[in-house]
Image (cartoon, rainbow, N blue to C red; front, side, top):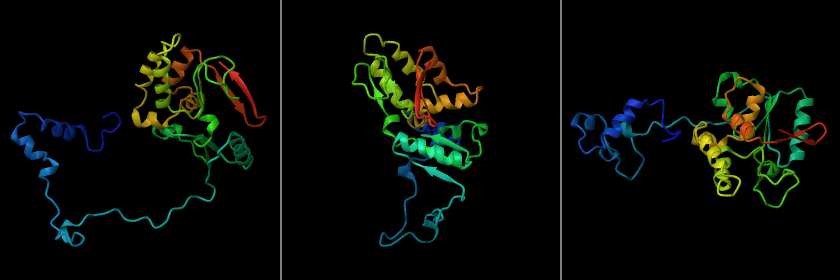
Length: 237
């Protein structure tokens, strides 16, 4: 039920529905909440669409969609292209945000600044890299023999990797890290949100209560930060 409980419906109807599954459920509850098998079926003659009162009230069809003329959405497939897009959009005076899951939209209103454009990082292989200790190093791997996670790696992927790392000698602490990450947000959010995106919210809004920031700080994680003006990469703890 993690993340899939509808708050619009309310908890009481959901609780009542669960009660009907009990062997000793009272008749009043059973009458209020009916099983799907007991619901009225379609009374169509099965040779055509439903008519009259049995017709489905479908949603109106969208004929077209549009965005403001100044809106800009980029989907680079390489770091070099992303750097180029950042430069082009910034020089054009646009306020931009680099996104992956873009889950910050659901946090608080103050984290949703007016923007002119977005750059999605989902299609950049170098930012999706996952390197385990002992694996062959890539040009973006750490100089040490530790684990490396690209900026676009999701929290769910991070949890899975920590579970695997915990089986190795010297990485037993990763089990506790995975355990802690499992209480961050909920499953659908963790499937989309990235660890780097979480840190960027913390970087911009210092009062944001980031468990990811706390966890990585305690683990003495190091960040490799690229600067788009010089294309240089620096390592920071």
